[in-house]
Every structure is written in structure tokens, then in C-alpha cells.
Length: 391
Image 1: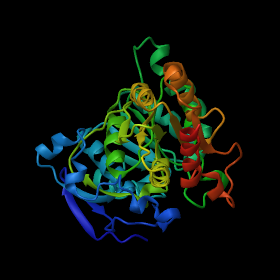
Image 2: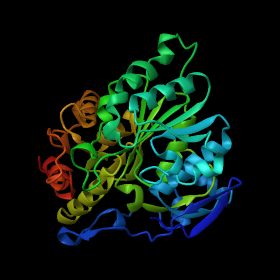
Image 3: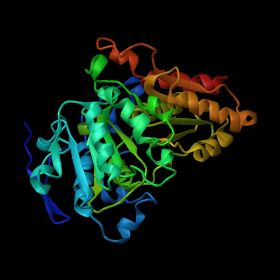
């Protein structure tokens, strides 16, 4: 199905990488705005851009190279490094030994053996329970839930066991080596059971960390940090970005900080916050807003870690701009945006110049036929920016 025509050597391992261009699918939208991941200015298309971040500057100093990867390849790279550097690390889930439905684990079973990368029965509750058990005896358990939509059967194990393991023992034992990977969010044709964004369910549960990357560089660094963090982490991978987002990714072993947001664009008039694939719709909305409202300056923040989210960075920004727009694909009621809006109101009430705007999925099951109307797009996000600026 896939033609792997480029191989590289790294960490004493040969890993196939799918060669492709930076541009994926995109369309030219309103007012000449080129919409979509393919035209994003946020993706790093050359090594100099990749190392420009202060978080990765040390890798440039160490003469680390880069390789063009899409997001699923970056995940594969991170998993390979985790298995290479930690002999207690294991990967398992439905179909992972032959690559998984999105090919994120391709080649790992052949490279590391089927006692470290193996398939499980089709039972999400069993996968999570097995992962908790392995982590409790010292293994680094990396479990895949094939789609985030099917994480619900594992909810009891994750919320009542994994999240509470450390606390119920007074820190005598824990499952800090547990990471749950789950392809998440809309893909364009997933409908009710393959497009959901369930992150808010887990943010209500103390003891879990929740992460969602926007790009290959972010996916690799955040996944390695999640695997090595001494707390259970659920790592939601936006499935629509698996092949659409392509960057020059540093070859070496690196981590990006959990719990720390990234300011992607500085601005002075309105703070715009999102995470995962929603970042690209917000980028386009900002481009449209600044084009239609000359002089407007928007600040764009990627949360990266949804729980615990970086309150300080968002508060600092809103105190400067006086306005806030938050967007995500999940339904509006009880969502992550509601928590952010509440917290910012507590911290920045006297700084706010306008009501906080939330741009979210609708409070309905995810519709197949009307997916493009459900997911917040450039226009809906632009309208929210304009509304808060014009207030």
C-alpha cells in the first residue's frame, strides 16, 4: 500500500521513511488566503527554521541534522528512540505489530522483536488494564487505542485506576511509565465513530496528563517527553495531520516540555488559543482578520499540553491584549475552552475589553454529512476575532 523509498540510519537502527513533498492538500480561500496545512507558515521546511526555537537551539549547537517527515513518521521515530533508549519499553495495541491502521508503528516489530511490539485482542478496556499492570511493575508501557473514539471502554481503567494509582498508595507505587496513544479529531470523512475529540472527559480527572501536537517536530518531542514523564499521559494525535503536516524534524533524541504552551505569533490586540489541528484554522483566521482589519495584531498560542495547561502564558498574553478567542473541535459545553475562559476571567477580569469568545464543535454527535459545518473553520474563527475586536 505504501512505497517506502528512503531509509536512514539512526540510533543503530534502519527505519523506512515515506518520501513526500511538504505540500499536502489545500485550497485557495477567501480574500486570497491559502487555507490548509500545506500553506502553513508554522511548519518548518528547512533545518534553520527547525532549530530556530529556543527549545531546540541546543540540537543545532550539537550539529544535529534534520530529516523531512510527516507526523506519523515523527511518531514512529519517537517510538523507535524510546525503544532504543529504554529496554523496559514495550508497545502494544490492536494491529500495531504490522504498523497499525495509520502505519505509525511500521517496522518496529521487525526492528525490536515481537516481544516488545505486539498485537492485543480487540478490547480497549483490556489494553488499558494490561498497560496499567505493566507500568505498575516497572515497564514503560506505550499502548495504542486505534481510534480515540474507542477509548470509552477503557475510561474506567484510565480514570479509576491509572489516574489514582499513585494517590491511593501515598506515592508508594505508581504507573508513571504509562502512555496511551490515540488518533483523534476529525479526518474529513470519519463520521460519528472516527472523528471525535474526547480530551475534555479526561481533563476533569486529576492524575492524568493530556497532550495534543500540531506538527511532526512537536509530535516527536512531546511524545518522547510523555513516554519519559513519571505520570500517566494520554497523547491525542490529530489523525488528519498524519500525512498532511510535513516538516524538517531533528534527527536526534529530544524532548519538548509538557505543561508549557508555545507562542507562535506575537500580537497586541487579541489572544487566540488552540491546540492540535485547530491551530491551522486559527492561523488562517488571523491572516484573514489582519488583512480585513489593517493594523490589527493577533497573538497565536498553541497549548500543546491540554492538562495541565499553561495558565501563566495565556494570562500574560490576555493582560497585554485584553481579548481572548479559544477554539477546538470538541463540543462547546463543558469543553476545554470553557475551563480556559473561566480561569482567564478569574485572573484577568479587569484587563478584559470584551467577552471571551469560544469557537467549538456543536453540541451534537459528530455528523458525517455535515462535518465541514461542524468543525470550526477559518470563517467561524475569523467571526469570533472580529466580534471581540469590534465589541
